[in-house]
Every structure is written in C-alpha cells, then in structure tokens.
Image (cartoon, rainbow, N blue to C red):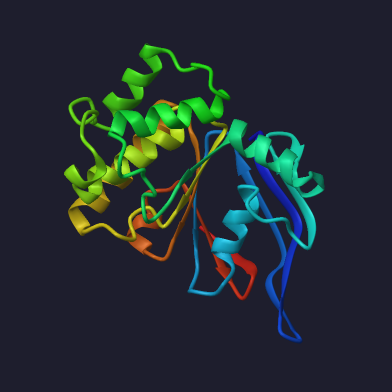
Length: 227
C-alpha cells in the first residue's frame, strides 16, 4: 500500500527544568493512502505529541515525518504551516468552532484560509460533504444552537471541506455522549469508505478504536504493537 504518512525514528524530548523528558522514543509508523488508523495508549504515552508532530504543529527533536512525499521535519515553521494548510485537516476534541459564525460560516472560513482568500471548493463538493455528515439543514445555525454531536460533525466537515490528504482526529468523541459518539464514528467511517479519506485518530476508548481498520498501541513514547 502506498504510504501517505510515514515516520522514521521519531524522537521528541522536552526540557523540564533540568530534566529531559522523552515523549517519543524512536517511533516508526506508516499509514497507507486511504487507510483508517487509530492510535491508542494511556495518558502520557506520547500519542498526542505524535499527532501534533504529524500535523506540523510541533517540530521533532530528531527523525523524519513524511507527509504525502514531503519531509516536514526539515521544514521551516512557515513551510510546515503551508504544508499543514494544503494537506492536513484537524478534528479536535473541543470542536474549536468560531461561536459567532454559523456552521456555514465556519466552513467558508476554512475554505478561505486554505485558498488564501480565494474560493476553491465547488458547490457539488460542499453538498457531498454535508450529505455524508447529515448537516444539510444545520448550516444557518451557530454552534450554541447545535448539539455536541452536531458541533463535532461541523468540525469534521470543516476539516475535510478542502479535501486534504490526511485527517488527524484528536479524541473526536471525548466530549460526546455514547449516542453522539456512535454517530461521529459512523461519519468518520463513511468518509473513509466513500471519499477514500486517510484518517489517523487518537483515542483512549477501545470501542472508538475498533471502527478503524488498524489499531496501533503506544506506551512510554513507543509503539508496542498493533492489531
């Protein structure tokens, strides 16, 4: 399978006072194009640090991060920002929607940022995304007028509206009840299956991890197995 995302000997060390803390200890990960992978592990195992490095939000201490053929570890901050804008969509646990904008406004803002102010998403693509996420009738609502599950679906729509190469989801069901969690996970499966969207999802929930095609287990900054 063609690897769209790959790390080689990824190391991340933080300096805390006079002590070095090893968040990642030589992680090697490969994700195929169109694959849905979940990453599990206890709190503090390094999974969120790895996700932030994969998304270009952090620069590793050493190692390589190949995203769709580009090594982000060797990039400047500006270059990583540009690669992130073009190729990566984030779904956060806390939604991070702009409260003063409608759902449609949040999507349009994401489109403008991706296109540097230019309209680059056609109506057919937007309708397809909204249909998959069952949001057609919610676009005039502001976040506080939506349920938690609906807000997370808007956040997912915002992440994929520009059809990035990779979706990185950080505990996307962490703030949802069981019913809304099930809906969001079903949506992610649909996006992976119907749009061939590559998804890497961080979770501590075995039930959430089970919707992915492959689960990678982390502990103490290392990958310790997969299934």
